Length: 163
Image (cartoon, rainbow, N blue to C red; front, side):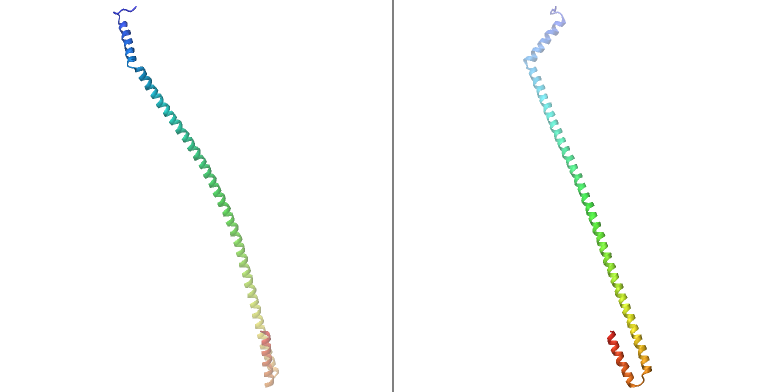
């Protein structure tokens, strides 16, 4: 048993008094309130962290959706550009073909005109030569004024018929 002369007795009495003082000054309530306040603060921080995490996930989902939309839009732009390029190439081929056909036609027409002009020039030269030869022959056979007049009338008539 404990007697007042033993140090354990006084340690026990001091401990009980200390506990009594703690209860008298309502320290357990204050400690409980402090712990409750700390728990509330931690709960608020956890709620805020949860809310921030949800916002971050929502932002991530939005950015992923926007990235998919941008990729789709880029693919559509590339597809449109490809179609436009193919259409322009087809138009260019058609325009080139038409231009070549027009130039070929113009060249053929020019050649035909040059041939016609050459033929006309050859005919004209042949007619002029024939007239000159006929004139010389007739002058040689017909001598005198009536023959010269007849020849000149024939040449005029022949010239007007050939032109």
